[in-house]
Image (cartoon, rainbow, N blue to C red; front, side):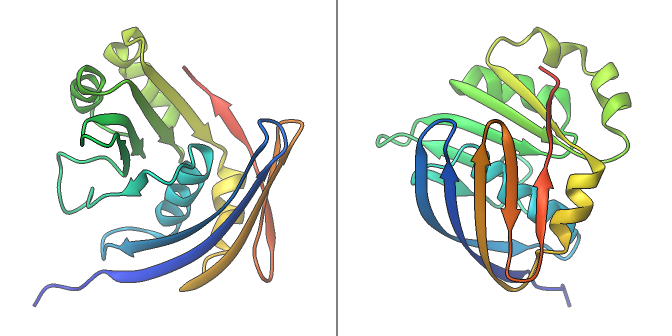
Length: 176
C-alpha cells in the first residue's frame, strides 16, 4: 500500500518594504512521502519570493511534467514556472519556451556542481537561478509545523522568516 502525502498549512504574512508588497496568503501543501521538510520549507520561500494570488503549488513530485509552483493568467496560459531543487536542464529549457519567466530555486551541497554542468540554463534569457544557503535551509526547518503561522519581513535586502517559536535569516544568492 502506497504512503499518502501529509498536508501542511501555512498562514504566510509578507511585509516586503523593499518593493512595497504586503499580503496575507493561506497556503496548503502536500508533503510527498519522498519529500523532506527542507524541500517543503524551500517551496514556501519560493512562494514568498514571487507571491501572487494566482501562484499555486502543483503536483510536481507526482507529475514529472510540472514544476513546484506555477502561475497562469486568466486564460490558463502559463506565465511563471518555478522549480525547486536541481532540475534537469532539458525540463528548464522546455519550460522557458512555454512561459514568460522560469525560476529555479536551488539548495543543498550539490548546487555548485549542478550549476557548472547546466550550460543550457545559462544561455536562456527568461530564466533566473537562485540559491538558498545551507544556513538558511537548516534554520527554516525549525519553523515547520503541520499548521504554521509565518511572518516574512524584508527590509534593505534582508529577509527574516518568523514562526511561533523561532526565526530564520534567509540568504539568497543569485546565480543567474
